[in-house]
Length: 334
Length: 277
Image (cartoon, rainbow over all chains, first blue to last red):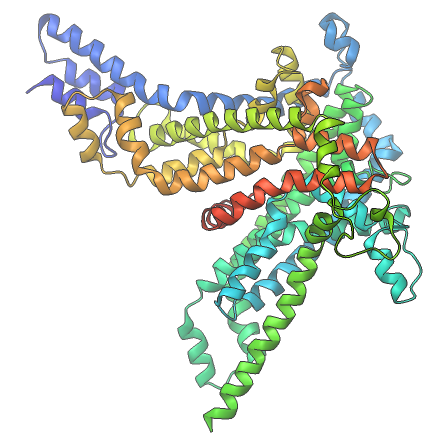
């Protein structure tokens, strides 16, 4: 029995026992110096998988796991610009940052704004993307393929470029939207200058941007529905509405769930649109929780306080997602 | 008897196409409007009513991006970030291979950890990641800008899924021939991954080109700004120069548009499987 071959056999295949263990069992019967050499070879073999996974895994841990722990740790301190330069200046303040958050009117405001954005955005994205997908699914001609690409385009376009363009469209005096409205003799709308309107304007832009991706997800799901279902329903005399209501929508249940959860998580983190377009204004009407965190950290340099905000947002996202999954499970069980 | 039915079906399809065309036009309008406006001279861009097609089309706005503003430099910085993220793509492929084709202690735990990082919201990691890079002395460096998004858990996952289909016998044969593990990976495994590399490569380019949050946070020095941060700065500093702003936007969007048209199939496939933005 050649150890060499054994050593080679160990490494790659799926069904074999882990390298470290089997290396030992292979090595034991071999006598003398051959044993040592074989062991060395087995150890070297054992390194390979770690060498392959190390760069990605270490980076993902450094930028995926460590930050959450660090945010929690820093949120109990008063870390600021001074403390950043000299760690001895940093004090532990217990839950002070958290109690301050719950008394901060701007944080309350940002939570409320985020809830409004989610309330506008999630149903908006769902309705627009589902409608477009259902219409696009009616044919597969070249025209429809081009339209599909067109609806997708905003999803891969840089957010700053989008915000710059929409900022011009929304401009009160020269913007295209108000110029079109004036043709219809409708008064100019203060798209970004009025607190109530500006939230709606940002949401509209984000719905435009976010729908295309979900159109693709719905189209993929629609194409997976077996045509036999529709044929059987047609034989039974089911009309278009009934087919939509009793076949299409139930078959899309998972896709709808997926879109709602991912859209919800994305909109809870609503950041770039208000950052570029309104910087949270007017009168903080578009300051989302993420923007609040950004400004606290990078404009006021209160890293401890900002970390507390980050952690609260993290908990909100986890709780909301968990509720979604639970309600889906309840739905499946029913 | 079937004839009226097919005719009504055809009319229906036409109506659907019409509704979609109008919707498509509304979706495309912001792009077309910015393209048109980017070629307008300063006074024409503020015309009431506006001209749909520029009367006196000019490249002046684009020229000013490079001469008066630092868009040439921003472009260079963006390309550095793109190049670095392709190194990240290689790391993803390596990790995918490691998780797919080797058995080793801690594999399942590590793979689960990798997947778990997908659930961490970016905005939550913003402050601590900055603090982390600051401790490492990497703020205000190009590496620091690229590092937080260099590798992607989803990329690792997709590579792993794909590489489990590479037959073990192929790797065995190469090992018996005395090929080193690195050689096997680069000469046998990677060339088999063409389709997934195309998808991931396209997505990597688009994500790196569009990157905004990290350069915004990590780069204080304007010399390190990427295009998106530079464009954001332009909007703040030239708030009423819409022709210039639109030229900046077109400058950013055009390359992605070209890549999208050329690799549409891969882009759509990649985004629908990942469901990521």
